[in-house]
Amino acid sequence: MDPAQDRAWGARTRAIHAGGRPDPTTGARQVPIYQSTSFVFEDVQDAADLFALQKYGNTYTRLANPTVAALEERVASLEGGIGAVATASGQAAAHLLFTSLCQAGDHVVASAELYGGSYVLLDVTLRRLGIETTFVAADDPQAFADAIRPGRTKVVYTETISNPAGTVADLAALAIVAHEAGIPLAVDATLSTPHLCRPLEHGADLIVHSATKFLGGHGTSLGGVVVDSGAFPWDNGNFPVMTEPVATYGNLRFWDNFGEYGFCTKLRVEGLRTLGGVLSPFNAFLLLHGIETLALRMDQHVANARRVAESLQADERVSWVRYAGLPDDASYALAQRYLPHGTGAILAFGLRGGREAGEAFIEGVELASHLANVGDTRTLVIHPASTTHRQLSEDALAAAGVGPDLVRVSVGIEDVEDILFDLGQGLAAADRVAGQTSEWSGATT
Amino acid sequence: MSQWTPPSAIERRDLLRRTRTVAVVGASSNPARAAYFVLSYLRSSSTDFEVWPVNPKGGEILGLTVYESLDELPGTPDVVDVFRKPADLPEVAEQAVAVGAGAFWAQLGLHSDEAVEIAHDAGLDVVTNRCLKIEHARFNGGLHLAGFDTGVISSRRTRG
Image (cartoon, rainbow over all chains, first blue to last red):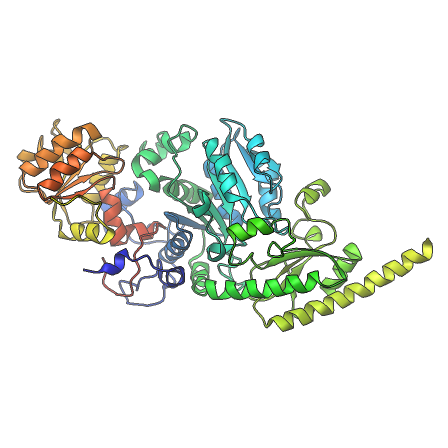
């Protein structure tokens, strides 16, 4: 009848269409904003069936919402996952994931280069609740393996591209490490997006996104997503939370009742329902719009970032650049393997003249915005050691690859010549400081 | 007889569109069991199927009469949906063929080459290792509302 249903639609098509069929009631072509807390039941039996999970449907926006569902299906489709659960922010997504996998006494093995917010979630908030984390070198799969505590470690966690140090994860090697221990590999894929890397194809089981960044892409809306591959064997004995009866839902067992759909169901009906970090329908609407142009934007972000990285590297005022797309970068080989279409648009560099020069750089730019975000259409700059990563100790900063001189740039999609011009203004300002510093140093020796 | 291949998404959707009556073999009155969940979904307002639970114990589940065997059903089932261990599937397939069922459907996690051969050779549509509830929900909006990837891409207004 309709052979279209069996076609493997391309990613650019799915970025526009997945989850977004015309509204059945009104015919609206764009996904409507269902800005409603609640949805009326057909009758008493319908209400009871919905609450007992015996049918699918809308009850209350803390559990599910039609606009949010469109975003969830779209991201799941782009990642090649079975399903997704959207949250209020990327942090809420990580929180939902960790608290669904772990309870007090359990353990996480994570990259030491995690984004500062993720690091503090694990190192402070969840540690206080009895969930421990061992942080290991991002580029050392053996260190992940060595840190696993059999029976207690429930997840291996890393970022596709670390923020801001730029280390690329060896996803296939980490998947083997996790699976040999009978636990899932969860990956924060915020900086790569499914346009550049689909971690599930390399063995990861779960993905976390801050949709706030490149997915939304325009700096308008916070949002997060957890994506499940649907392939992890939750009945392997390590996850009683998936196989034991759930008293609050009539003693059903997530694995027995829902099979491969069980983990997403648990995330939603247990985690999201009780934790409450739910995405607003309006934000979902804006994020959906952003995703429609994900491929176009990412191609331009990547092209501009490469030009900026090469330009900075060639500039004698710059002491070092980290961008895995540069052939002499420590992550270059892994980037070629996992991110062949580009290594994202975040780069980090240090200035001759150190921290003071870095601060002068940030004060010296005009076009680039000084703010604490990445993945906007606009070029953004920040000094992480004094802002996003300020809560980390000096040791943790060193392990995260965030030196005091590090400046992070999220390269936007403006005309690249304008971006280069503006960063040049910053470099000139930094150089004046560096010059003063060296003159002053010279005078005292 | 041609070799059986697992039905494609469009074939599963068409099968469900043709379906009016479903026999659920191994229906359970235990609310924690998948067999109960699927039965409760099939008889909810999500579908317009006539649902006939089958279990040798008889009695009632969710207000529905439980038939002790397939040959006691009040009509011919379009689909025989089976919750029985794989070793029991060939016997159920033979019974499904005997009562003139349109399709033999083994639930998520269940498959038997022998049962597939019996049902397929007799001309029945055959689905294995899939959940009837999930497949129905995939094509009728339920899975979409729960954040799952339905694989459905369409700019047509009509559902399904």
